[in-house]
Length: 113
Length: 262
Image (cartoon, rainbow over all chains, first blue to last red; front, side):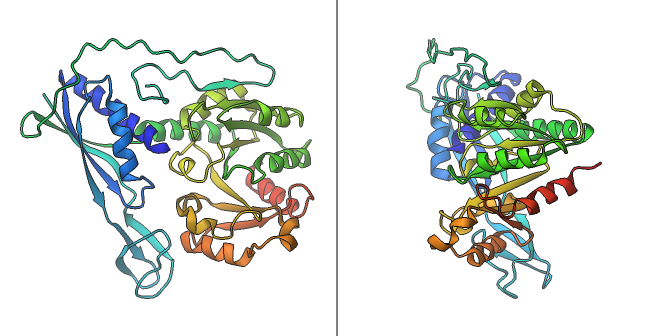
Protein backbone atom coordinates (compact mmCIF):
# COMPACT_ATOMS: atom_id res chain seq x y z
CA UNK A 1 0.00 0.00 0.00
CA UNK A 2 2.50 2.61 -1.18
CA UNK A 3 -0.41 5.04 -1.67
CA UNK A 4 -0.19 5.81 2.07
CA UNK A 5 3.45 6.90 1.65
CA UNK A 6 2.48 8.95 -1.40
CA UNK A 7 -0.42 10.55 0.49
CA UNK A 8 1.84 11.37 3.43
CA UNK A 9 4.42 12.92 1.09
CA UNK A 10 1.72 15.09 -0.46
CA UNK A 11 0.44 16.30 2.92
CA UNK A 12 3.99 16.89 4.12
CA UNK A 13 4.90 19.00 1.05
CA UNK A 14 1.73 21.13 1.00
CA UNK A 15 1.68 21.68 4.79
CA UNK A 16 5.27 22.94 4.76
CA UNK A 17 4.57 25.29 1.83
CA UNK A 18 1.26 26.43 3.34
CA UNK A 19 3.07 27.23 6.56
CA UNK A 20 5.51 29.44 4.62
CA UNK A 21 2.45 31.26 3.21
CA UNK A 22 1.06 31.74 6.75
CA UNK A 23 -2.05 29.75 5.81
CA UNK A 24 -4.33 28.49 8.56
CA UNK A 25 -6.17 26.01 6.40
CA UNK A 26 -5.64 24.05 3.17
CA UNK A 27 -8.88 23.88 1.18
CA UNK A 28 -7.83 21.64 -1.68
CA UNK A 29 -4.87 20.05 -3.44
CA UNK A 30 -4.53 19.55 -7.21
CA UNK A 31 -2.50 16.59 -8.48
CA UNK A 32 -1.37 15.22 -11.83
CA UNK A 33 -1.19 11.43 -11.84
CA UNK A 34 -0.11 9.51 -14.94
CA UNK A 35 -2.07 6.41 -15.87
CA UNK A 36 1.11 4.31 -15.73
CA UNK A 37 2.45 5.80 -12.49
CA UNK A 38 1.49 2.70 -10.52
CA UNK A 39 -0.97 4.59 -8.31
CA UNK A 40 -4.49 3.41 -7.55
CA UNK A 41 -6.56 6.60 -7.51
CA UNK A 42 -9.26 5.21 -5.17
CA UNK A 43 -6.65 4.05 -2.72
CA UNK A 44 -4.80 7.37 -2.87
CA UNK A 45 -8.02 9.29 -2.15
CA UNK A 46 -8.71 7.06 0.84
CA UNK A 47 -5.17 7.44 2.18
CA UNK A 48 -5.12 11.21 1.56
CA UNK A 49 -8.10 11.72 3.82
CA UNK A 50 -6.36 9.77 6.59
CA UNK A 51 -3.02 11.51 6.04
CA UNK A 52 -4.65 14.95 6.35
CA UNK A 53 -6.00 14.27 9.84
CA UNK A 54 -4.54 16.50 12.55
CA UNK A 55 -2.90 18.79 10.02
CA UNK A 56 -4.12 22.08 8.52
CA UNK A 57 -5.14 20.02 5.48
CA UNK A 58 -7.80 18.15 7.47
CA UNK A 59 -10.87 17.77 5.26
CA UNK A 60 -9.13 19.20 2.19
CA UNK A 61 -10.49 18.27 -1.23
CA UNK A 62 -8.33 16.29 -3.64
CA UNK A 63 -8.57 17.06 -7.35
CA UNK A 64 -6.79 14.54 -9.54
CA UNK A 65 -6.05 15.16 -13.17
CA UNK A 66 -5.16 11.78 -14.71
CA UNK A 67 -2.71 11.96 -17.62
CA UNK A 68 -3.10 9.54 -20.53
CA UNK A 69 0.02 7.60 -21.39
CA UNK A 70 1.70 8.59 -24.65
CA UNK A 71 4.70 7.00 -26.32
CA UNK A 72 7.03 7.51 -29.27
CA UNK A 73 7.61 4.37 -31.32
CA UNK A 74 11.28 4.12 -32.29
CA UNK A 75 10.53 1.60 -35.03
CA UNK A 76 8.00 3.61 -37.02
CA UNK A 77 8.71 7.12 -35.64
CA UNK A 78 5.13 7.77 -34.56
CA UNK A 79 3.48 8.95 -31.35
CA UNK A 80 0.60 6.90 -29.96
CA UNK A 81 -1.57 6.54 -26.86
CA UNK A 82 -0.78 3.55 -24.65
CA UNK A 83 -3.64 1.77 -22.93
CA UNK A 84 -1.56 -0.39 -20.58
CA UNK A 85 2.07 -1.27 -19.78
CA UNK A 86 2.20 -4.07 -22.31
CA UNK A 87 0.29 -2.80 -25.30
CA UNK A 88 2.40 -2.65 -28.46
CA UNK A 89 2.61 0.19 -30.98
CA UNK A 90 -0.72 0.05 -32.88
CA UNK A 91 1.02 0.74 -36.21
CA UNK A 92 3.92 -1.75 -36.22
CA UNK A 93 3.04 -4.01 -33.27
CA UNK A 94 6.48 -3.44 -31.70
CA UNK A 95 7.36 -2.79 -28.08
CA UNK A 96 10.34 -0.64 -28.99
CA UNK A 97 9.03 2.68 -27.72
CA UNK A 98 9.85 5.49 -25.37
CA UNK A 99 7.27 6.73 -22.90
CA UNK A 100 6.56 10.45 -23.25
CA UNK A 101 3.73 10.85 -20.76
CA UNK A 102 1.92 8.72 -18.20
CA UNK A 103 4.35 8.39 -15.27
CA UNK A 104 3.46 11.80 -13.73
CA UNK A 105 3.23 11.98 -9.97
CA UNK A 106 3.16 15.64 -9.08
CA UNK A 107 1.42 18.32 -7.06
CA UNK A 108 0.29 21.12 -9.37
CA UNK A 109 -1.10 23.54 -6.81
CA UNK A 110 -3.08 23.89 -3.60
CA UNK A 111 -5.66 26.31 -2.27
CA UNK A 112 -5.30 28.00 1.13
CA UNK A 113 -6.92 30.50 3.44
CA UNK B 1 4.48 11.62 10.00
CA UNK B 2 3.44 8.25 11.34
CA UNK B 3 3.28 5.51 8.68
CA UNK B 4 0.71 3.49 10.61
CA UNK B 5 -2.23 5.81 10.93
CA UNK B 6 -1.16 9.02 9.18
CA UNK B 7 -1.22 11.03 12.41
CA UNK B 8 1.22 13.83 13.06
CA UNK B 9 3.36 11.78 15.43
CA UNK B 10 6.90 10.93 14.30
CA UNK B 11 7.27 7.54 12.67
CA UNK B 12 9.01 5.28 15.14
CA UNK B 13 8.16 2.00 13.45
CA UNK B 14 11.30 1.67 11.30
CA UNK B 15 14.34 0.11 12.96
CA UNK B 16 17.82 -0.49 11.54
CA UNK B 17 19.91 -3.08 13.38
CA UNK B 18 23.00 -5.23 13.00
CA UNK B 19 22.65 -8.91 14.05
CA UNK B 20 22.89 -9.20 17.84
CA UNK B 21 21.75 -5.65 18.52
CA UNK B 22 18.83 -5.14 20.86
CA UNK B 23 15.63 -3.73 19.52
CA UNK B 24 14.68 -0.45 21.14
CA UNK B 25 11.08 -0.47 22.11
CA UNK B 26 8.99 2.13 20.37
CA UNK B 27 5.48 2.00 21.75
CA UNK B 28 2.97 3.28 19.26
CA UNK B 29 1.05 5.68 21.46
CA UNK B 30 -0.66 8.83 20.33
CA UNK B 31 -1.62 11.81 22.39
CA UNK B 32 -3.38 14.14 20.05
CA UNK B 33 -4.16 17.66 21.07
CA UNK B 34 -7.08 18.45 18.86
CA UNK B 35 -7.08 22.18 18.84
CA UNK B 36 -8.99 22.56 15.58
CA UNK B 37 -12.61 21.69 14.93
CA UNK B 38 -13.35 18.73 12.63
CA UNK B 39 -16.79 19.72 11.48
CA UNK B 40 -15.79 22.30 8.90
CA UNK B 41 -16.21 21.80 5.19
CA UNK B 42 -14.12 23.51 2.57
CA UNK B 43 -15.66 25.16 -0.42
CA UNK B 44 -13.28 25.78 -3.29
CA UNK B 45 -14.49 29.10 -4.57
CA UNK B 46 -12.41 31.13 -2.15
CA UNK B 47 -8.88 31.15 -0.81
CA UNK B 48 -5.54 31.62 -2.46
CA UNK B 49 -4.12 29.30 -5.12
CA UNK B 50 -0.45 28.38 -4.66
CA UNK B 51 1.16 26.78 -7.72
CA UNK B 52 4.09 24.52 -6.81
CA UNK B 53 4.54 21.92 -9.59
CA UNK B 54 6.41 19.57 -7.26
CA UNK B 55 7.22 15.90 -7.78
CA UNK B 56 5.54 13.99 -4.95
CA UNK B 57 8.56 11.71 -4.62
CA UNK B 58 11.06 14.59 -4.85
CA UNK B 59 12.44 14.00 -1.35
CA UNK B 60 12.93 10.26 -1.92
CA UNK B 61 14.51 10.89 -5.33
CA UNK B 62 16.87 13.52 -3.92
CA UNK B 63 18.17 11.20 -1.20
CA UNK B 64 18.38 8.38 -3.78
CA UNK B 65 20.64 10.52 -5.97
CA UNK B 66 22.74 11.37 -2.92
CA UNK B 67 23.08 7.62 -2.22
CA UNK B 68 24.00 7.01 -5.87
CA UNK B 69 26.77 9.60 -5.70
CA UNK B 70 28.10 8.07 -2.49
CA UNK B 71 28.09 4.57 -4.02
CA UNK B 72 29.80 5.75 -7.22
CA UNK B 73 32.47 7.66 -5.33
CA UNK B 74 33.29 4.58 -3.26
CA UNK B 75 32.94 2.23 -6.26
CA UNK B 76 30.17 0.26 -4.55
CA UNK B 77 28.11 -1.66 -7.11
CA UNK B 78 24.61 -1.50 -5.62
CA UNK B 79 21.72 -3.77 -6.58
CA UNK B 80 18.11 -3.51 -5.43
CA UNK B 81 16.64 -7.05 -5.29
CA UNK B 82 12.86 -7.13 -5.63
CA UNK B 83 10.42 -10.04 -5.79
CA UNK B 84 7.37 -11.65 -4.24
CA UNK B 85 7.88 -13.21 -0.82
CA UNK B 86 9.41 -16.70 -1.08
CA UNK B 87 11.12 -16.37 -4.48
CA UNK B 88 14.49 -17.21 -2.90
CA UNK B 89 16.18 -13.80 -2.57
CA UNK B 90 17.96 -14.62 0.68
CA UNK B 91 19.13 -18.03 -0.55
CA UNK B 92 20.47 -16.42 -3.75
CA UNK B 93 22.38 -13.93 -1.59
CA UNK B 94 23.80 -16.64 0.68
CA UNK B 95 25.09 -18.63 -2.32
CA UNK B 96 26.34 -15.53 -4.16
CA UNK B 97 28.27 -14.21 -1.17
CA UNK B 98 29.84 -17.64 -0.58
CA UNK B 99 30.95 -17.99 -4.18
CA UNK B 100 32.41 -14.45 -4.28
CA UNK B 101 34.28 -14.95 -1.02
CA UNK B 102 37.92 -13.81 -1.15
CA UNK B 103 37.23 -12.15 -4.53
CA UNK B 104 34.76 -9.30 -3.94
CA UNK B 105 33.61 -7.89 -0.61
CA UNK B 106 29.83 -8.02 -0.25
CA UNK B 107 27.53 -6.16 2.13
CA UNK B 108 23.76 -6.50 2.51
CA UNK B 109 20.86 -4.31 3.61
CA UNK B 110 17.96 -6.61 4.47
CA UNK B 111 14.43 -5.24 4.31
CA UNK B 112 11.53 -6.98 6.03
CA UNK B 113 8.53 -5.80 7.96
CA UNK B 114 9.61 -7.78 11.02
CA UNK B 115 12.32 -10.18 12.38
CA UNK B 116 16.11 -10.45 12.14
CA UNK B 117 15.86 -13.87 10.45
CA UNK B 118 17.27 -12.87 7.05
CA UNK B 119 20.04 -10.72 8.54
CA UNK B 120 21.07 -13.65 10.76
CA UNK B 121 21.29 -15.92 7.69
CA UNK B 122 23.49 -13.38 5.86
CA UNK B 123 25.56 -12.81 9.01
CA UNK B 124 26.41 -16.53 9.00
CA UNK B 125 28.06 -16.10 5.56
CA UNK B 126 30.46 -13.54 7.04
CA UNK B 127 29.18 -10.56 5.01
CA UNK B 128 28.41 -7.28 6.75
CA UNK B 129 24.64 -6.87 7.11
CA UNK B 130 22.03 -4.57 8.62
CA UNK B 131 18.36 -5.40 8.94
CA UNK B 132 15.83 -2.67 8.24
CA UNK B 133 12.47 -3.52 9.80
CA UNK B 134 9.88 -1.34 8.12
CA UNK B 135 7.15 -2.11 10.67
CA UNK B 136 3.98 -1.71 8.66
CA UNK B 137 5.81 -0.26 5.62
CA UNK B 138 5.61 -2.28 2.40
CA UNK B 139 8.86 -1.07 0.78
CA UNK B 140 12.29 0.38 1.51
CA UNK B 141 12.85 4.05 0.78
CA UNK B 142 16.04 5.94 0.00
CA UNK B 143 16.37 7.35 3.51
CA UNK B 144 16.33 3.85 5.07
CA UNK B 145 19.09 2.81 2.63
CA UNK B 146 21.04 5.99 3.43
CA UNK B 147 20.95 5.21 7.14
CA UNK B 148 21.58 1.50 6.57
CA UNK B 149 24.61 2.16 4.33
CA UNK B 150 26.08 4.55 6.91
CA UNK B 151 25.60 1.99 9.68
CA UNK B 152 27.22 -0.70 7.50
CA UNK B 153 30.16 1.53 6.60
CA UNK B 154 30.41 -0.33 3.27
CA UNK B 155 33.97 -0.89 2.01
CA UNK B 156 35.24 0.69 -1.22
CA UNK B 157 35.26 -1.51 -4.37
CA UNK B 158 32.52 -3.81 -3.15
CA UNK B 159 28.98 -4.97 -3.91
CA UNK B 160 26.02 -3.80 -1.83
CA UNK B 161 22.91 -5.96 -2.16
CA UNK B 162 19.68 -4.38 -0.98
CA UNK B 163 17.07 -7.08 -0.38
CA UNK B 164 13.81 -5.19 -0.59
CA UNK B 165 10.60 -6.14 1.21
CA UNK B 166 8.95 -9.10 -0.59
CA UNK B 167 6.39 -7.25 -2.69
CA UNK B 168 6.10 -6.89 -6.47
CA UNK B 169 4.12 -3.65 -6.34
CA UNK B 170 5.27 -0.89 -4.01
CA UNK B 171 9.10 -1.11 -4.24
CA UNK B 172 8.86 -0.34 -7.97
CA UNK B 173 8.16 3.32 -7.27
CA UNK B 174 10.98 4.04 -4.86
CA UNK B 175 14.46 4.72 -6.23
CA UNK B 176 17.03 3.77 -3.58
CA UNK B 177 20.12 4.99 -5.46
CA UNK B 178 20.94 1.53 -6.86
CA UNK B 179 22.78 0.86 -10.13
CA UNK B 180 20.14 -1.70 -11.17
CA UNK B 181 16.92 -3.21 -9.95
CA UNK B 182 17.02 -7.01 -10.19
CA UNK B 183 13.61 -8.68 -10.22
CA UNK B 184 13.51 -12.32 -9.11
CA UNK B 185 10.77 -14.73 -10.11
CA UNK B 186 10.68 -18.39 -9.16
CA UNK B 187 9.21 -21.13 -11.34
CA UNK B 188 6.77 -22.06 -8.58
CA UNK B 189 4.98 -18.78 -9.34
CA UNK B 190 2.91 -18.11 -12.45
CA UNK B 191 4.74 -17.43 -15.73
CA UNK B 192 2.36 -14.50 -16.28
CA UNK B 193 3.81 -12.49 -13.35
CA UNK B 194 5.30 -9.90 -15.76
CA UNK B 195 1.79 -9.20 -17.07
CA UNK B 196 0.28 -9.10 -13.60
CA UNK B 197 2.95 -6.78 -12.17
CA UNK B 198 4.17 -4.87 -15.24
CA UNK B 199 5.55 -1.85 -13.37
CA UNK B 200 8.15 -3.89 -11.53
CA UNK B 201 9.32 -5.62 -14.71
CA UNK B 202 9.44 -2.33 -16.61
CA UNK B 203 11.80 -0.70 -14.06
CA UNK B 204 14.13 -3.72 -13.63
CA UNK B 205 17.23 -4.26 -15.79
CA UNK B 206 17.82 -7.90 -14.84
CA UNK B 207 15.34 -10.72 -14.26
CA UNK B 208 16.56 -13.78 -12.38
CA UNK B 209 14.42 -16.86 -12.91
CA UNK B 210 15.06 -19.01 -9.82
CA UNK B 211 14.34 -22.62 -8.81
CA UNK B 212 14.83 -23.93 -12.38
CA UNK B 213 15.63 -27.36 -10.92
CA UNK B 214 11.88 -27.63 -10.23
CA UNK B 215 10.87 -27.03 -13.86
CA UNK B 216 10.05 -30.72 -14.57
CA UNK B 217 7.47 -30.66 -11.76
CA UNK B 218 5.69 -27.37 -12.35
CA UNK B 219 3.59 -25.80 -15.06
CA UNK B 220 5.90 -22.85 -15.75
CA UNK B 221 6.83 -21.89 -19.31
CA UNK B 222 10.20 -20.08 -19.19
CA UNK B 223 9.96 -18.78 -22.76
CA UNK B 224 6.44 -17.49 -22.22
CA UNK B 225 7.55 -15.69 -19.05
CA UNK B 226 10.45 -14.07 -20.95
CA UNK B 227 8.15 -13.04 -23.77
CA UNK B 228 5.72 -11.39 -21.32
CA UNK B 229 8.57 -9.59 -19.56
CA UNK B 230 10.03 -8.35 -22.87
CA UNK B 231 6.65 -6.93 -23.82
CA UNK B 232 6.84 -4.69 -20.76
CA UNK B 233 10.59 -4.10 -21.02
CA UNK B 234 12.32 -5.03 -24.32
CA UNK B 235 15.81 -4.53 -22.81
CA UNK B 236 15.46 -6.76 -19.73
CA UNK B 237 18.18 -9.46 -19.40
CA UNK B 238 17.48 -12.93 -18.02
CA UNK B 239 19.59 -15.17 -15.84
CA UNK B 240 18.20 -18.64 -15.08
CA UNK B 241 19.42 -20.21 -11.87
CA UNK B 242 18.76 -22.69 -9.12
CA UNK B 243 20.14 -21.13 -5.97
CA UNK B 244 19.85 -24.34 -3.95
CA UNK B 245 21.38 -26.67 -6.60
CA UNK B 246 23.85 -24.16 -8.03
CA UNK B 247 22.70 -24.25 -11.70
CA UNK B 248 23.39 -20.98 -13.51
CA UNK B 249 25.04 -19.32 -10.52
CA UNK B 250 28.24 -18.88 -12.55
CA UNK B 251 26.43 -16.74 -15.14
CA UNK B 252 25.14 -14.54 -12.33
CA UNK B 253 28.49 -14.18 -10.54
CA UNK B 254 30.28 -13.53 -13.85
CA UNK B 255 27.81 -10.72 -14.53
CA UNK B 256 28.57 -9.31 -11.06
CA UNK B 257 32.34 -9.58 -11.67
CA UNK B 258 32.03 -7.77 -15.00
CA UNK B 259 30.16 -4.89 -13.36
CA UNK B 260 32.45 -4.23 -10.42
CA UNK B 261 35.00 -1.77 -11.83
CA UNK B 262 38.55 -2.70 -11.04
